[in-house]
Amino acid sequence: MKRDFYLGLAALAMCGGFGVGYLLRRPAVYAAPVLAPRFEVDPFWPKPLPNHWILGQTIGVSADDRGHIWIIHRQGSLEPGEVHATTNPPIAQCCAPAPPVLEFDQEGNLVGHWGGPGKGYDWPDSNHGITVDYKGNVWIGGNGRGPASAAGAQGGEDKELGGVDPYHDDMLLKFTREGKFLMQIGKPAASKGSNDIENLRLPAKIFVDPKTNEAYVADGYGNHRVIVFDADTGKYKRHWGAYGNKPDDKDLGPYQPGAPPAQQFRNPVHCAMVSHDGLVYVCDRANDRIQVFKTDGTFVKEGFIETATLGSGSAWDLAFSADPQQKFLYLSDGENGRVHILDRDTLAVLTSFGEGGRQPGEFYGVHSIATDAKGNIYTTETYRGQRVQKFVYKGLAPVTAKDQGVVWPKSGAK
Image (tube, rainbow, N blue to C red; front, top):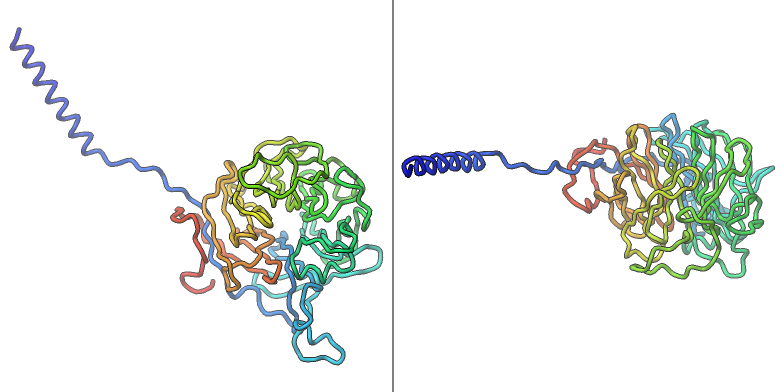
C-alpha cells in the first residue's frame, strides 16, 4: 500500500516536472501592437503661386471626387506690408492677395481660382470653411462681425470687434466648381439666436451627406448648435445642441478643466461631419471634446482631447480616414499645434504628429483638415500660419510614440 502511494507521488512529480518544463518552454504571448496610419510631410506641395500671389489666414480645406484640393483664405487678413504690389503706384513687385478660393490638382498645381463679392449674394466679411460636396458644389461659411472683420482678424480669427455688429455673417453660400452662385441660406446680421431656423450665426463649416442630400452646419461662432437643411432647396430640417438638448444662448463662462462637462456647446461649434455609417461628429472646440450623434440629433457618446487646453481649445476640425470603414479620425488641434489620430470607435487618441512652428511639418494655428481618396491629409493654418500643407499617407504602422513630432520624409519628399 505504501509502495503504491510512493509510486503515485513519484508519477505526480514527474508529470509536474514535465508540466513545468513545458510551461517554461512555451513562447511568450504578447499583445498585438496598436496600429495607426503613418504620414510624412511633403515639403514641395503645393507649387508656388503665380502673379506674386500670397495667402492670408487659410481657413478651410476640402478634397473633391477628382482628387483636387480646395482652400479658402482671407485676403483682408494680410498686413499692408505684405501687399505692396497693390498700391497705386506699386511700392514693390511683391505681393498681392490670391483670390479667396483656390483649387489645386494632386501635383500641387493651381488649376482654378475665384471668389469675392458678386451680384445676388452676400459674400462673408470673414470667410470660414469650405466644403466641396458629392455633386461638386462648393459651400462657404463665415464668421465676420462687420465691415472691420477682415482687419480685426489679424489679431485672431475669432475675436470680437469693439463697436461692430458682432453677428454679421449669418448666412452660408453655395456655388458651382466654377464659382457660379447657386444658393444663399440666411441673411447678414439677421440671426435671432440658436433657435432661429431661417438664419445662421457665424457658421463655421458645412458637410453634405450624400445619402440624404442634407447639409449639416456647425453653427457656430455665434450660435450653439448643429442645424440641418435640404442641400438643394435650403429648407430647414432640424437642429440640436450638446447632448441633443435644445440649444440656448446663455453665457457659460470660460472653460474650466476638471469642471463637469458643459450641457451646451461653447463657441465655436467648429465642425459637423457625417460618417459612412450615419454618425454625426461635432467639434466642440473650446470644450476640448468631440460629441457624436445619430443623424436625428440623438446623443451617442463623447470623447475628450487634451482637456487642460485653454484659450481656443483642442477640437478644431475633423476628417475621416479613407478606408471604407473610416476606422480613424484625424483631429486638428490649433492651440497645441498637433494633428491627433483617434480610433473612431472609442475616440481614444492613438498618436499625434506635428509641432509648433512655421517649417514644413510644423503648425502655427492648424485650423482645417481634409483627406483625399488616397488617404493623404491636407491642413490649413490660420493666424500668421497662412498656408496649406500635405501629409502623404504611408500605410499603417505600430504606434511607438504618443507624440511623433515633425513627420519629416525619411527618404526624399515623394
